[in-house]
Image 1 (tube, rainbow, N blue to C red):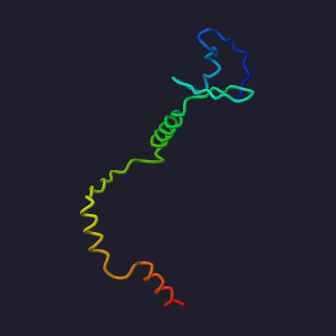
Image 2: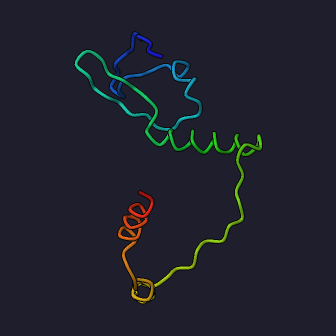
Image 3: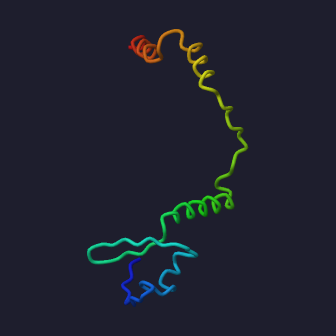
Length: 106
């Protein structure tokens, strides 16, 4: 929604009446963009993350989503990863197995 407002420039800056931005909710900070024919004042970018959190909260309350009690996978050291890669790398590459399988089906 765009509104054209007659503003007053003071030594403190440009004063914008609070009711004009009431629809944004309880914001603490704004961003200002300067364009050739206008200055745009909008809620600071972190508002999107607040909005996301609010939407997720409302969806949880409505039973549309839930947190599942899955355990996080264990942290594996780079040495253990290297050992597993070496152990599991015997045989043909998967791409070759797929190509051979496609040839058998043809």
